[in-house]
Length: 322
Image 1 (tube, rainbow, N blue to C red):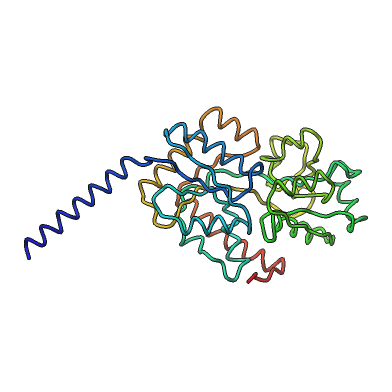
Image 2 (tube, rainbow, N blue to C red):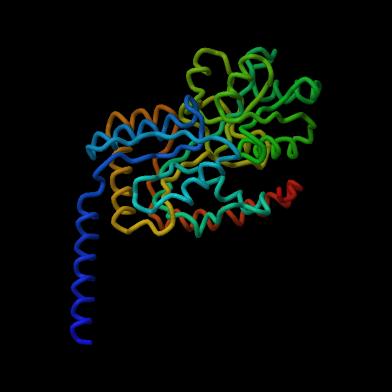
């Protein structure tokens, strides 16, 4: 029995040494980074930071765009991934928070099926209108919308996406009955806005600033507590009398049971990449604020916002989707 015990101890020590060696060599090959948006839209932020981090750590970070179902398809892929640090996720924390409120049979538990690494950045949503409309300001747009509700359609990134819920909140708080048209992500919605298929959409400055600069879209309001530094003349929705405050946000997430050393590695290296001078300038130029929270702060945010969205679902009369 003593000999068996010694053998077991030796095996345990060998396995521990092997685990330590793996920890010390991570990452030793390419990392897949899943982004739940199509190319050319809101994914630009994660793609830029990943490129900088890749240079810093000397390993490729391959972007895998998996859009659809309000980020649920991408989230499910991460849930099913091996927790070895080679499949990571630029998540949408608000979609995690809204999932339990909006879906009766959600295929994952945001708090149990993932390892939260860092709530790393957030950005305002702008209420953008088509340059084809005969209006330029929020007050003019609201007056036009009241007079022509059947001629104004809002776009969204899909049913029950954060942008869809913003449009629903705007609809409820203005009391104006307009249509909301779902698209498969930001890029198709922006193309529809510029083509005149829809007349308004909520979007961050990340993929839209160039279109705004070219006068192909017009920002008339912003969803944050304070005005955007990029658009200081654009009022907040609170300023114009609507109780809507919200922001897009981004988090680094891995599968459940991600080892502590890998969590620490990603928290450190992702934050280091964001604060690279050239990358930081890129981020701030898009109107994005770096947060870089701890895993514990991320979890607290998610718990609090899950409760908030459950309340909003009731207020908006949203039945859980099956």
